[in-house]
Image 1 (spheres, rainbow, N blue to C red):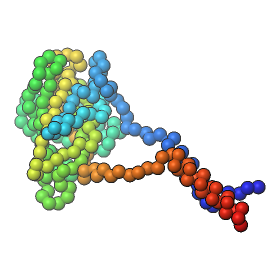
Image 2: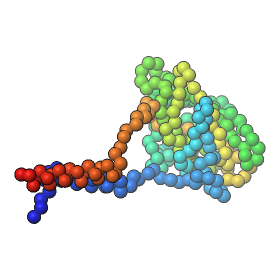
Image 3: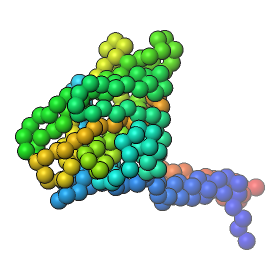
Image 4: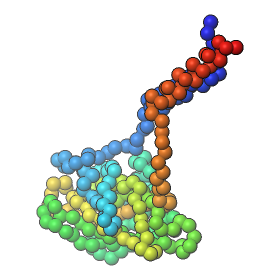
Length: 239
């Protein structure tokens, strides 16, 4: 009876491992939202966040719900139960004006209401979010990468919008971006009824460094496995 050599077994294991990796599904974070407007549903285009020439749109959203309170700590706990990412703290600002700040991971965030833009159902509530390095030369320093959630509130209605991997640049020690919100107290109603906006932040991390890694094609790996198996068989016959 033929018994595979160690080299042959290695080739077979490499091929099997590759096929297993290809067939194993990655479980993504919950998807609560639609990718385009649909009746009275929330949709990803409801909100956008612009930093310079870069426009960020949500990767997911959740609502409309009643969180039971406008308290930041209450809504942070509600948010972290959505199984998106882990968020550390947040800041709330009313549409009446003024600004409020919070520090997360030594980055100082300030949220400021900015009025409205547009008309009817194309009216956007505007906010400005700025950030600054609050700890001098000690890490983390700008630029940083964060996950961000914006929570819109109107009356007893709340909606959460998730932004992944937002790059906060530096110019030279602070910068800002504009938030446009088209979530409405009653979707498809021209009356926004916006009460306030919250912004929640993950711990900051360094910007991603993209490196090209050459991954062998499936055929290459299978060929390598077959070659190793043949080599083991030929060595067995010679011996």
